[in-house]
Image (cartoon, rainbow, N blue to C red):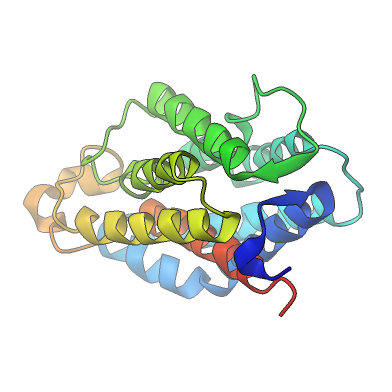
Length: 219
């Protein structure tokens, strides 16, 4: 079996995938700092890096039997270490989707879609942002739509993550055309046009990283 055939991951593989995504977020700290400095406080890269350092600390030396506990630990680690609105929002990206999820020992496309769909709704309820407000929603909502389409198409995990990644990348690009309605960039008005949102960029990196990890299976 190759990566292109993979339909699901067990708990250990799911943990490894999240840890890999955290590594890639930390590697992209300079990019996230640069993007955020253009229209924000410039601390998004630092916050995301700190958050995923705590994720690694809490995930690495534990064995998990359910996907639920992996996502819950990831989300709680980010909430507790990042602080502020970003910690709550990005923590909810992982935590919110498993709050009402039945216990899952494996991660497949339907479960992945269900998790991030629920997370998206939780974030929108908490932060009140919508698509086009120049926030992380601009990448997360298109990514979720890609996952939903993949469920309908009976796609493999790699195919689903590729679709989510591509949609998130488009969302990041589209965020350049939006006037911010939240955060420090809100005060810039039209001066924020032409700059992508840092939170959306982080979402894209997470989905890109998950795709990369699955693609590396059995190579």
